[in-house]
View (cartoon, rainbow, N blue to C red):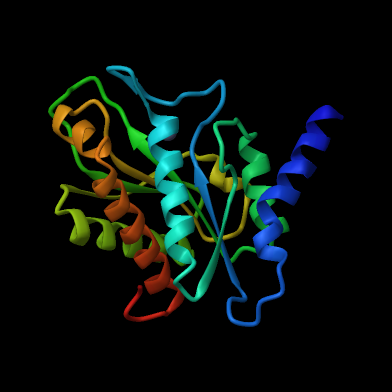
Length: 208
Ligand SMILES: [Zn+2]
């Protein structure tokens, strides 16, 4: 029950901008900062994935104010939200798509680059693949990072029918990429690129 109230409070807090009457921006997109709270995600050299991706999500939200779409976040603070709840939230606010932002880790420190995941239950005709290509293309164009492609995996994104992708913006385990991810101007570029990829997918040419 407590959880339910917490979820309702979260919904109220986070969806307030989406519920504001606005004829200019009827299109709502949900951006999810992965992990949060007790779940730090990848931790390398004291850097926690949950903090990096929250910062990027907040930047996407800020940048979206100058865009034709409305971005709603699943979390705007360091808190954990149940995974299924994240996609249900996206459906409740009437989002047209869902993007989860993550940073990667692998034991080999030489591995670096950006990859975008689609759940392995999605058929080839699913728009998530096109969304993944649009976001990955924008990210690689903006950052010149290594393009590790669109990939597929078993993901909690299967709990929604919305177009949904999981973006891995870089490897915390790669020293060079970790230092980039710790640089605010680089995170701003990642945020801008993700938003541009979303806009391209939605048919807003020219982006920001
Ligand atoms: Zn993650």
